[in-house]
Length: 388
Image (cartoon, rainbow, N blue to C red; front, side, top):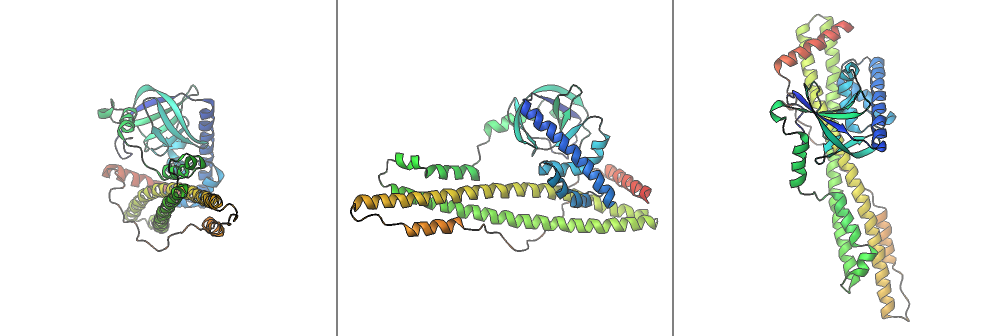
């Protein structure tokens, strides 16, 4: 879909967005919330004395920003790393990755904003030299007030734009059987109209079979939720470890600078940068897992609702058949069905417990060359020394 962020890009392919009034308002609102986020980051960094410590900044600023703005979680994570580049930019722009923007076909893309996701037509305006950004794409406000999205590409792939790659994927990839689509089929299967139109005369058996399928789907979704909750615990535990180690490192680096031990300060900064790279990957995984939990919960709520409907339908059918067979005896109240409905309606979603093993450190998270890495270490050391 996109070139990976670690690749070296020397060109940008530019897509001019053809915006509806609603999409333009959503983008304007996103830019406004992003500017608010940057102001908050400056305020929090100054108040806490954090400086360039990304992990500490995330710990202090992430939740306040999520509460004060409507920004998608992924844009907040990207923005934490973008603060210095944002302040240095000559025109407003937002960092994007494949979670926030996807090219859907030859003329449309999907963009996440503070007001939801929009499908937006575009036209390719050409290529520009250079790609200085760390992210895969940038949403830019042009000088004439329009908006463009630029994607980083390499010269060797200049004729294979993200648009063409995504068209190929869209044409050949099978549609996934999502949790919600399966829940939708189950709900449709026990709808009153579907039961009435069924050719099988034994409608009670039909509904009972539907109930069995719904109960199986419920069990599967509860298992999925338990796995996602366990992953959430594991990811958050590892992130907390990184936050603690980074805090200790910051104090050690300050002490080394005070003692004029630049060699030790450089080693500490190098380790700090490794932790920040791991932290970025962890933050993205946490965001993705949170979306997975939301999807499972939505599906589970729909399945439980459809189960209640199916049980009500079953009770009505059984009562109807009983009345038809014994018209003088009167219908019996389906107390068992009512109890079952109440019991299912009050089920609490199970949460997984336990302490899983932590994520091992990855040696290839940061693809910076040694020269670039040494330069970054030296620059950060100089900044820290200037603050003392």
